[in-house]
Each structure stands twice: as C-alpha cells, then as structure tokens.
Image (cartoon, rainbow, N blue to C red):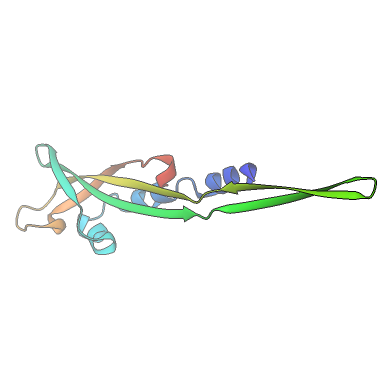
Length: 128
C-alpha cells in the first residue's frame, strides 16, 4: 500500500509547478481570472511584488474495527475467544500557499492587468 502511495505522489509531483510555470510572462489578471483574487501581496523591490493564494483542504480517514475469533476445545468443552481492534477516524487538514512574483509593466492602469508574472516559488511537495 505504501509503495502505491509513493508511486501516485511521484506521478502527481510537479502538477502545481507546471500550472504556475504556464503563467510566467503573462499578466497577473490571467491567474486572477482562474483562481480568484490573491489573499495577500507585498512589495519586494522597485516595481516588484509577490502575490499569494492560499488553499485549505481537509478530509477524514474513516475509522474501522476488526474482530477475530478463536475457538478452543478441551474434551467436550468449547470456548470462544474474541479480540476486537479499533482504529478511530483521523481528520487531516492542510494549508497550501502558492506564490508568484510579478513586475509592474503598465503604469497607465491599476489592478492585476498592470502586473506581469516573472516567476513563482515552488510549492511544498504535498501541495503539488
């Protein structure tokens, strides 16, 4: 099972980075139209700014229980022994932050169309 999970992660690895790379050289308004307004932005130098998007996700791994039974016989007497193993449900939450770097390329307008994406910070592996 663990080997399958690792294989799936390797196949998916780079998906978010490939999407982010596709925006390099394009107006920030393209990313905004696809993913909404960034949750935060800050200046990083003269005419440069970093824009951040955040994605929260959560899921529950359901609980399970397993019961095993053993029968022991002693002559004409039989005894039944049972063992139940319980695994409670687990709730998993994670927050992924995606950052793109942009330069202001138009002074005649305001808003996302005034910025051109120049690069991005690769997201954490679990956010790919």
